[in-house]
Length: 168
Image (cartoon, rainbow, N blue to C red):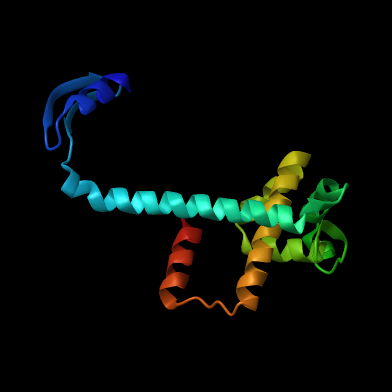
């Protein structure tokens, strides 16, 4: 909101504004001094950098492994979402990639691990949405395989963090 931004950026570090009116109400703004926010800035920058590096790695994984859903993948996924029991044992290939493939039974395992709303949304999803979903799931599967082959194990704190992220 422009009125809020204008007032906030005019403040010196540690300064407090007068009453500022915006479409959301009245505000008194305090701009914290750098020592108060230094740690949160550092944490935010580190998280952004890690996210960016993760994205670059995932992109390179997509290219190097040539992850590509098969031509009828979207229709097959919709059918599987309608009847997970039938799909559970199917070895029908949904995605091909260098060094392997992602089968219907793999999809069913992932759907069991994800929020149930994901499986419920698949029948109404567009072909493009399903294609992107499959690419992301295959990337994650390949990452898990790499971690497993490298002997990566999670500590108790890692599991707690993952559960908290999953639950949120």
